[in-house]
Image (tube, rainbow, N blue to C red; front, top):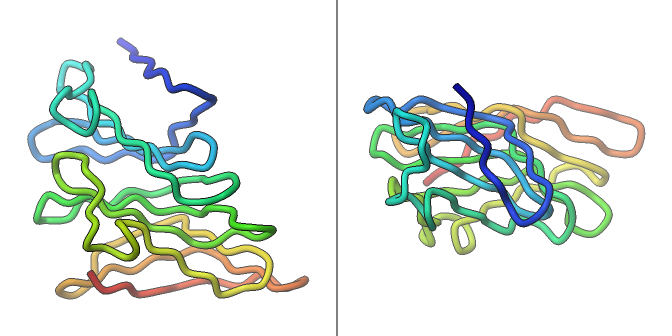
Length: 155
């Protein structure tokens, strides 16, 4: 089978994770926002998650690209990627509750950004770490240099 989930504008799925109860959490982007969707085991939208199964979170003034999901042991969900603010991309992470609501206690109103390079930063992977921390991996660009970006965040 297959399922299509429609958004107001163009959208792209970029990452997914399988919960222990068999539900599927998918993340991606639409415009300047990260989108998070949860499907029941039969492929239908989980109506109790977010708004009708979907949560849309503005992370940038320009284009946003989500690339990785982390399901935490406490049921919370982290969605990571990058968002364009001004002329450059910043690494971005959004924290959600197990019900799909943005966690306002994380970062600034649920969104945390990191800008290391002058031109572009972006996360491609997010992983659990010790205690209340997680690590991300990606890249950081500054002029002509492109470097590894490894960062540790605290909840």
